[in-house]
Length: 74
Length: 497
Image 1 (spheres, rainbow over the protein chains, first blue to last red):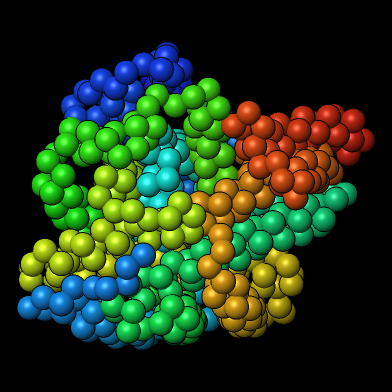
Image 2 (image 1 turned 180 degrees about the horizontal axis):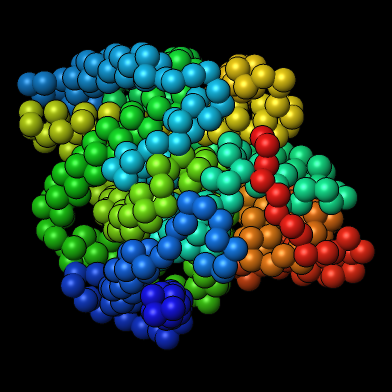
């Protein structure tokens, strides 16, 4: 039960990171600002995707993949 | 584009021809070893390697299959045309591994219980005894076959382009397409999934190492990330600008399109079946989630860096931006020539690994789901091989035409495939879905997507028409299933397929 709950929250966090990766928050006419050598909105998107990778890997390690049908919801 | 290649101490074209030749010989040897390792002539052994793929081989074959000619040529081409907004590619490739959470934990035990070979086996099992079940299986198999043919076409085009470029145009585009198609057919027919997954494993390692070396060179040449960004901004300011509202909507739509549609690729589903056990699958998925950071991100940045360094036409020609950068790298010295050729061979390997997986899945889909399987397992395997060969030969004339960009081919394929998603994801999580509901959903979603595409409307406010079609699809599936008199909770019965 604990693993499932943690996994569920990880998937919610991944969805939030996906939402944040798209630069909805930036003005289209904003001047170019660099962050780690990239346009700042690109650096933010990449940081979100690194976060998704880490959380998703943990979520997979917490996932039960049974080889026989248990009848219960995963 | 300038077809001239380097003429340094080591000639790029000569080294390229030798390297490709050695690689192709290695493939033939692997196919023969795989053929001798087979246990029987059953579809399970040929199409799923006897269901015994371990973590490392499964991970590498998933990786090499997912990262194809599309990734290595189409993505840099699209990044070259779009600029930094195509950083979305890293996100949408990762989304595939996220969406697998909704598929793998439920499909895997059903597949083990039912001895599934193809995606259609799930549909046969899940909708057994329901009206419309056969129609649903045929429509899904048909859509998947069309998507596979499209995918195969993209790989054939990429094979021709890379072979021609690495040999300094000594091997013509058409010889690359025809010759490599024949070789794939040979080793896939001889060694089945075993040969495909073993070659995928070697190809995956080559690809990661080669791209890392190329990216290091580009960073060094371009003065680091900041130097590259400034150079791009100077040549094409819109490539570094914050995306407009339509591009942001398209960013979101592309993540949904790729994330959902890619999990129902037949070759991806068949690798879920082919894993040795659930733990192997779980670990492979955990590793796979990092691969967009070392592959998609790298090829995207290579395409973007090229904006400041080379001038290509905006259409089909820009799909050759990665080969163009490789040739430039090779021109800078002897060691670079060898490394550049290595990356070329890695790219060719990645493309061939996707093509062989497509061909293998296509054969199994046609033999088991469309033709309905033969009386004996041995005959089903033979039918699969013959059907795949016929399709591959039929694809070659289309691949010889170089009119459409690889990215557009990807979008078209996924907009068809995404309509199959409810028959898997919704059916796995909602027992009330009926065969007629799923089929009605597919037909409505398809009519919407195909109709608007043919009418010349590929997107509405940046959202792919296929993604909007999926919304219609799901709504129709739920409505028809609810109204359907046969909308009973379905008892799952083990398949005898």
